[in-house]
Length: 452
Image (cartoon, rainbow, N blue to C red; front, side):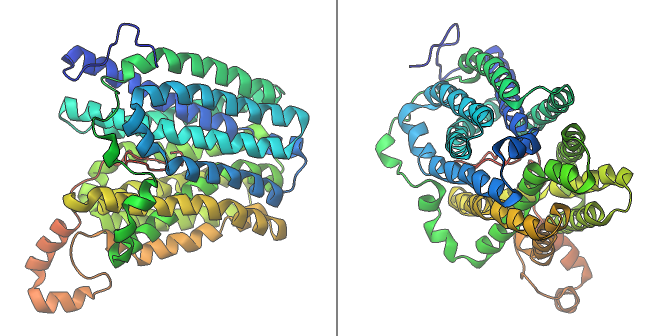
């Protein structure tokens, strides 16, 4: 049982209690973003300490995707049976222990221990992700206005801060084991202290028997027959691939292909994260002005441009420019995909679960794919496989419209309905602005981590 301190569970919180919960949940998001980036900031050192190749590291990282998948299958049921407060409390200790195993693996140079630790880190993160997003949604409902983007922005802010710290300790020569243990101990202590404030109620659901195991795959079974859902899933696959490839491989590419120290690699990824969170912060008005289709296609163009510049730049000073352009392009794909999946209220949960599963599959496929390619060519060139996914996203962008054909000709539509009526239809079909702050940590039930 999680302790409550002065914040006992309540179903009728006062406005002051809602405000307290809002700031506490912001803190949870920032902490989890910082924990993720603490690991990402030392990937080159981890590779060297474990004495593995790029493809060997990819094989180890994929254990994290399996951990996320395993957690994904049981988190919805666990949250309903035990409540979000208990989930946040116990997953804190699980995450601390798993992170310590990863730290220890770098000290004893044990790839198997790293694989076990990384599996458990992702497994425990899945529980935290579902619980903190559920509490964020409850805060948003109590406040009566859209504040979900702020929570996911806090996740990215935590990432950016931890990347800066990672660059500093790497420059000072601090070993990853001490870096990881110190950060995990401090952040876990803060997390345990704010959980009671973050959970206004957080008790088990009254009808637990209605909730089944299987996560999004069980929830979404019927939706996989819908062509539009599948196409949105492909778009989300590409968007998730864009984010996670930068997170896992950008810093290592800087070290291996450009001959720079790990701290510089961390700073380049920091540029990517800052560019991404900046666009997400202003994402709703951007999408409202451009529409989903145009915003998605512009994002795909930015991703391809950034990747090409990153792979073929003749001078290093263009690398941060490439990282920034890549980050701008990576910002809106995930929120647009989830928003499009949720267009029909009656089927929103199942459809969001269906497209979320594509992100999980991306986590299983992308690390080994890029790792194996990185054995044959420069890692910066291997990352160009992400450009192919972004091109597919560009082609399939019409799938995120509410109505209209997926590949229909605009000129033919003009002849049929007239320019004025088509413009009005386009505006309605593109849908309202989405809550563009969503990252690898989405607001959907049982949605997996990216990230964001």
